[in-house]
Amino acid sequence: MTASSSVSEAERGHWAALSLGALGVVYGDIGTSPLYTIRECFAEYNGLAPTHENVLGILSLAFWALVLAVTVKYVLVILRADNNGEGGIIALMALTRQLVGKRPWIAPILFSAGLVGTALFFGDAAITPAISVLSAVEGLEIATTMFKPYVVPIAGFVLVLLFAMQSRGTGSVGRLFGPIIACWFCILGVLGVLAILRAPQVLQAVDPRHAVGFIAAHGWGTLVSLGSVFLAVTGAEALYADLGHFGRTPIRRAWFALVLPGLVLNYFGQGALILQDPSAVRSPFYLLVPSELLYPMVALATVATVIASQAVISGAFSLFHQAMQLGLAPRMGVRHTSAQESKQVYLPQVNWGLLCAVLALVIGFGSSGALASAYGIAVNGTEIVTTLLAFWVAVYQWRWPRLAAILVFGAFLAMDVTFLAANSLKVIDGGWVSLLIGAAVFTVSSTWIRGRAVLYEKLQEGGASMDDFLRSVNERVPRVAGTAVFLARVGETVPHALLHNVKHNKVLHQRVLLMSVLTEDVPAVPKERRVEVTALEKGFYRVVVRYGFMQGPNLPKVLALCSTHGLVIDLHDTSFFLGRVTLVPALKPRLAPWRRSLYFALARNASSATDFFRIPTDRVVEVGAQIAL
Image (cartoon, rainbow, N blue to C red; front, top):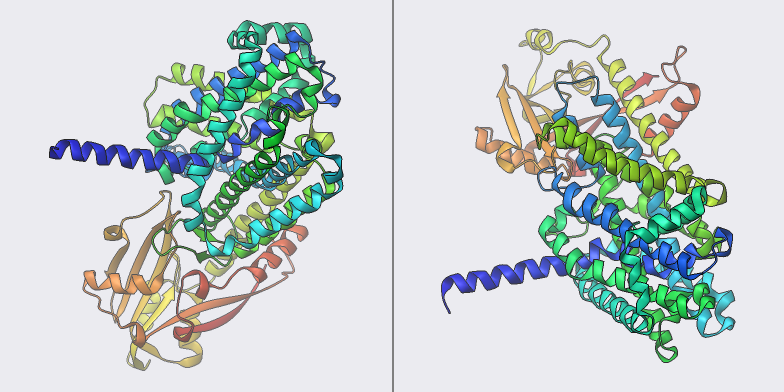
């Protein structure tokens, strides 16, 4: 065997492993959609009879939704809009902020759009585990009605177990996801083929004229059906969100090789079954399964939905972590669950808050059919934001002619808006839940951003400039051995902690580091660009530290990197002076009363700077200050 052939085989093995991993993480959500999509299209509340024409029309709509909304839009176009290899709504928002930096009139609009899309993601993150696990467990009702009272308790138990395991990390479990989901898609395809062989006329649904005929026959009533058809493409946003984990090539290969064929064959198989037996609309997915294999299939479906839920939960952790790094959300406790993979994080507060929301949805709605009314509108909103932001990437990064970009993304937007109109019909029946969750997240985030801006304005008022402070440092201020680190914003006046230290302790250390930690609009900043050191005078140094939004700050490691700039620092001889601000109501507040109360609550419950920057607690000195807002 030649060296080139060995390398080729190694590369093929590498791509195969990544494609298999993409199956487990990326496609779990969209892969479990066959459990409920066709059933909901013919649910009683839709008023759609399972006639030959209607079955072919629905299948044709689902097929072309998968082709246009997922294959063309996401797999072929949106996956190209990466931010240094990373995808997802926050990565896309950060990328557009870079691209339109010289066009300030559009930057706030794009930032607000990204914030809305991020908030809506959390609405979807609460519903996905609830509807997925419920729909899998409901398969027990097909075997016998005696299980019906136990569906909700069993689903709740599975979900509690899933969320309780999050603190262990997903690295070891993740290796099992790919093979299980690969098996799932193979079984989807096999079940579909067996049914199609009994009613091959169902393949006529590939012809888009059946979709057009369905729309013509039902007119505006088509919107009701489109709200259910959209369930077939929920999870498409995960293709983009997990771009950084696997890369576009493995995600595309997995889609074309296994996911798309498995989904289409299963949907067409369910349609073939309904053509033969219209009463099968009550549960076409499970009625495809031979009775003797029903219980194993319920078990496999439950595992598949747990995997789908895991992907959404991990995505919520990652997204919130990125939001914290960019200053869009209050600091919370973060645990890194892998020594090798920095992207694997666990946020306890997010985890348990999400579990409470999921359990409330399971208990409140009681069935996947009822939850389907709440599902779709949040993720649809996120997809619209993705389309709008990606348009600017196409114009300013890909250098598309503006007319071509308008035509392509205008078509995507028209499709997204049509689905939004269909999903808006679900608002009264439960769609308000995901919108409420999204609105709550948006309110918290916007309040945090505004509150921090007002706080920094107050801190700057009346502050001394750094030049004046350095000139005032003379022999009368005693210097003690060691290094002192003060956190300071770039261009800020003298940090309050430094002023208070000199005022009350009346000493300065031999070396004083004014450290500014910046989060750039890129996923990761390489180590060689991490630290910038500027010597001032009288033992003062300005240290600028740069991280990407996928990275977590670690100030002790930063001190070690300073040695490459000629600044050798012993951590054991270093003290970190951190300002602890106590907020009190001002007589003339700059925030609305309700927003001020919310910001005060967020600030009180935010994790400490010591934990966030991973500073050893025995090296920290906290200096208090009272600020009226």
